Figure (cartoon, rainbow, N blue to C red):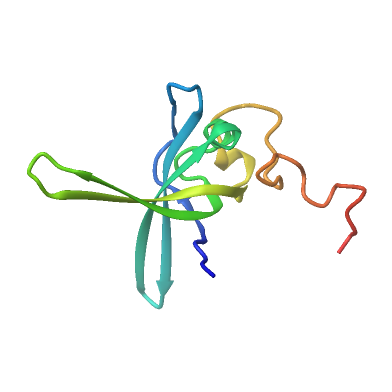
Length: 135
């Protein structure tokens, strides 16, 4: 059995960057800072994140630098050969799910009326499904 799962809550360090693969697949890259505090000390870990397809488009539309977000996904490390003959490494979180955690005014500079901070990664309000039990 194996498990590759990452869960983080933090703030975007920069605005999401959207691009499209030659196949037309949407790809959104962004970074998330997770700061832990204890007493008067603190440490910050930075995570490079990437989302694909509709998830990428949703993240790019509603998130901006400073937005608080919950990210769930898996770790993937890419390797390549550098010009100097050494290997380069980059580890990213491949986003599978997310939740907006910032209030509307903090989470987006966009003025869209369809933003719902209580929505899940599919954009559906949580707990509003009439077929869902209320617990």
